[in-house]
Amino acid sequence: MASPTRLADPKGVVEKGYDQIAPQYLAWSSRRPTTTRAAYIEKLIRLLPKGAKVLELGCGAGVPSTQALVEAGLAVTGVDISASQLTLAKEHVPQATLVHGDMMSLSFEPESFDAVVAFYSIFHLPRDEQGAMLGKIKMWLKHGGWMLFNLNGHEDEGDTVFEDWMGVRMFSSRLGVDGNRDILNKFGDGLKVVEDEVAVEKVGPFDEKFHWIMARKQSEDNV
Image 1 (tube, helix red, strand yellow):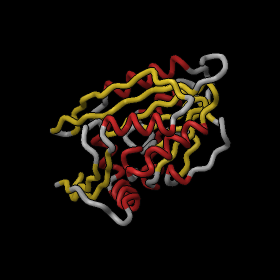
Image 2 (cartoon, rainbow, N blue to C red):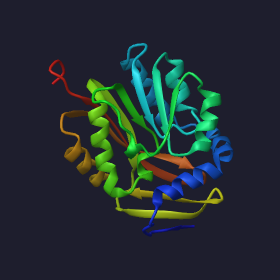
Image 3 (cartoon, one colour):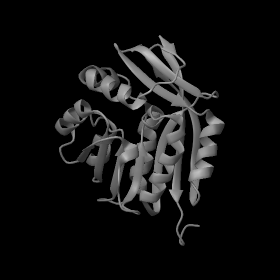
Image 4 (cartoon, rainbow, N blue to C red):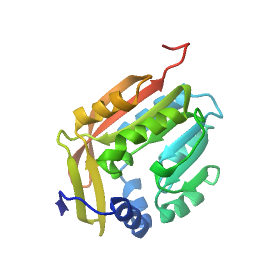
């Protein structure tokens, strides 16, 4: 059951939840490959040279996204708030550099990555952090680099706490599609959006909307 509410420690809820269900979540998610995500990953891979540096925020157990990026010859750094998820990721993608932590607390040098991706992860941040997270991603991108992520695709704004999501508590938040675009405009100066799509995907028995955005950090050569 889901309830709209505010939590004192929403990230703690997310971390604990994914720690508790890591193997179960892997088994469930591996049975529901999303064609939308796969298509965007394939598109990104075609745009990047071999050895390009890619940061994945919310890599989970490393499949399917991290694995696909690594197998394409990219140098991937994966980050997740769940230590249990990263333990699984070490088994699936030992070639990747894996970092345990809150994505908002990360510190990288400006222009460190050729691409930054975040699949089904930024909406686990509180609403007031999502725009700032996009600003950090833009800073970490090299000029000409690519940003690929999705957010909650529903029209309304709010927070949701699932009291029994696969047996655990889970938190997510949403700004609404217009709100997503607003934070991109506010924090994404210098980014050129090339894809902006609200896609419907099956999540268990439900149809869920996700807002996909792909953008490129402008340089003198591609303004």
